[in-house]
Image 1: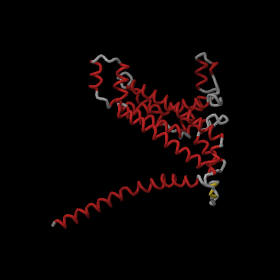
Image 2: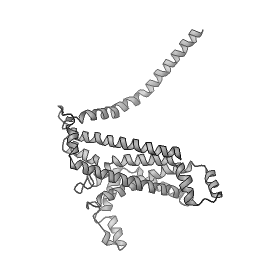
Image 3: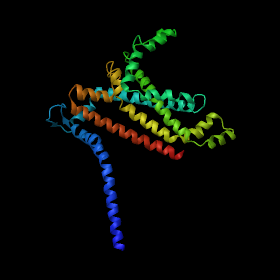
Image 4: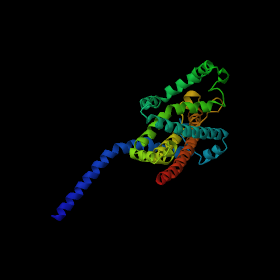
Amino acid sequence: MGLRNATWTNNTRLRTLITDALFLLPAFVVFAVFFAYPVISSFYFSLTKWDGINPELKFIGLANFQKLMGDRHFWTALRNTFRYAILVTVIQNVLGLILALAVTSKVYRGFRVLFLVPPLLSSIAIGSIWSYMYAPNGAVNSLLTLAGLEGLAQDWLGNPRLALYSLVVANIWKWTGMAMIIYLAGIQAIPKTIHEAASIDGVDVWQRFRHVTFPLIAPAFTINVVLSMIGSLKVFDIIYIMTQGGPGRATESITTYIFSRAFEANKFGYGTAIAVVMFAIILALSLIQLHFLTRREVRA
């Protein structure tokens, strides 16, 4: 009897394992075809000289990476990307947190839906809208003129000193609502009794935010910072739609430079090498951020 039960148990476990494997198989195939294979093949293509069309590849080892170290356009794109990412991450999280705190009150609760509209719009629509607004005769300059500030009117996307910051504003406008929602979820998860106890103890609003609210929304802060940093480092759509990396190379990012090298200059191997470097940078920064931010969660 004991042997029969053990056999039946083993057969049941085997059937369960096979069933689980069959359910996981479609997801595994999709992951392998659309993620694992492209990532692994990219490391190989980065070691070749290939135009992306000819089936013949020439293996050149680390030559693409050696060339990359002396490519001044790459370093310009890298500098622009970091500047863009830092500005977007800081401003987007500050505004998202402020909006989340504001819409928790009954007075502004109805405005939550308005901040969800920009994230739902496509990047093509966002780029087209803001390109029109930034045009010399667009909405931004028209509003400045109506306000008597015509001296501040600019060619916002045509001025190399202002173009990158103009793109930052457009990106923040699109994604701040999403950051607000994540912060709002963290704030609403805080038990009301904690705030009530702080109020009874005479803690003012600022001290309550600093010592109660902000430490308790540490997980939401971690998610927002990591997501906004990763999204900013790999930004492509808004930049390509609005400026295509111009004027000159004032708004050239790593992704737009990859696109120009791989698909416009037909240097697919070199473009893939840049993508591999970008992957390594994003991975390293993400791990560093997660390390320090999760430690802060534990301390909080």
